[in-house]
Each structure stands twice: as structure tokens, then as C-alpha cells.
Length: 297
Image 1 (cartoon, rainbow, N blue to C red):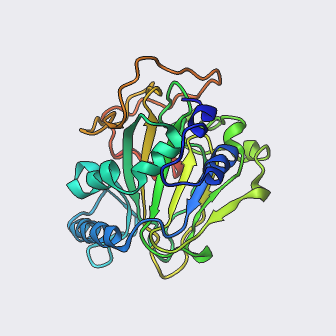
Image 2: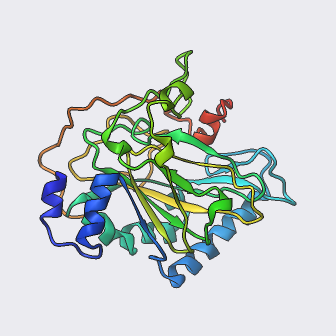
């Protein structure tokens, strides 16, 4: 569904101004949107995975570890596909407070694509270089958006996510390097065409929600504070946006309709999209390993 048709529908939870801002700028920040009750439940489950990581000495298909990880000092990069590993994450994605937000921005029919929990650990949690999401999972159109939840208070010292307003209307960048190797970020030379001076760093209290379009240029700095910055992310796509490439692993919930009816017509966008490499059966490959040019798990 095109943006003008979405905006013609009455909103459920957002204001019309917020929706117009999303379509104009390619992102939205909702401060303190998710309740403490939800946060406490998500933290309880997530802490269990942190404890489980103490048993690991290397990353696996579920937990991506920081190189400095140890049993005594667990340091996680990511919980991969959390909706596969505990029903609470699926409850949050399929029935939680962001479902109405997604309808306000994607229209009455939309699907789940994938989820992840990026931990951005304290005292050196890694940067995420400037990139766009859609090259990781191309779709027939660009009605695809990532919804992030700040599980803790996030300030400027913690490596908050930064977005470039309006970049979703611009170039879809090459995310391969000069040797035709996938690196999952925009090259330094191409960044000269990105208005980095306009960056908006998205900070806010625990429960704040970030939303960004799949074409929006975004990234984050290292977390050099003494506090972790976990960000629970999941991606929804409009029902008429069909994925063009498989993910590294097929998950139970991928493609599940969250709200509305299945599409009977597919929507195509005229702007071409770069394809990622075939990552079939390489579940341990993450944006961290790609950007750091690490070998596959």
C-alpha cells in the first residue's frame, strides 16, 4: 500500500503528524512507548540467554559472542532470531504494543520477517557502520521497516543509533567492497554522497521505540560507557512486499501474517535493489562478522 493510501486511513496510536514525519524523514522515535511490565518480562527472558552464554567459547547459531567474551565476563553481540528461542519474544512481536504502530505505518496488512537482539555491551560494544537494511533482505517494494526497543535508558555516551533523515528517498548503496566481497556497509567514498552532517542520534529512556525504513542510512558508534545498550529489533513488511532472497536460516515465524489478509497482488517498486550473497545455511553470519570481515561460523 502506498504512503498516500496509508495516510488516508485514520491512525490507531500515532498522530497524523508522526506518520507524515516517518514518510518524510524515514524514521520515528517514540520515547518511553513500551510499558515497564513488558520491559521487565523481556529482561527476565533475555537475562537467561546471557547466563546461558557463559557455557560457550565461540558463537553459534543462537548467540553471537564478542571476541572478548568469557564465562566470567559474558559479552554478547547478538541473540539471533529470538522469536525462535522463547515464546515471549513472539508474543511481543505478534501481540505487543508495536503492532498498532506498524499498522499506522505499513497499512492494515503486514507480515513478520525476522528479529534480533543486539546487546551493544558496555566498555567497547562495537560500532555498526553506516548501512541500509534492504540490501540484506531485498523485497519487491520498500514498505519494510525495523522496529527497535531500547531495553535500558540510552544517552549519547552509549552508542545510540543514528539515522540520516530523508536518506530513504535517495540512493541504494553498494555494500560490497572493491574486491566484490560483501561487507554490509557503505564505503567511505560513497559516504561522501550521504549527508552525514544531518545525523540524528536517537536517545531516550527505557521503553523508547525506534522505527526506520529499510532504505534509511543508519549506524551507531561504539558504546564506551559502563552501561549496556540492548536493542531488541524486529522487522515487519507490508503484505504486498515479497522477499526476493532467502535468509541464512528459515524460521518458524518468517512470513507470518501479523494483521490483515494475505495480499492478492504484489507491489513492485521501480528502484532496483542490490542482492546480498547467498547465506543459506550460514546462520552465524551477522552484520558484525560481515563488517569486521570475520570468517563464517
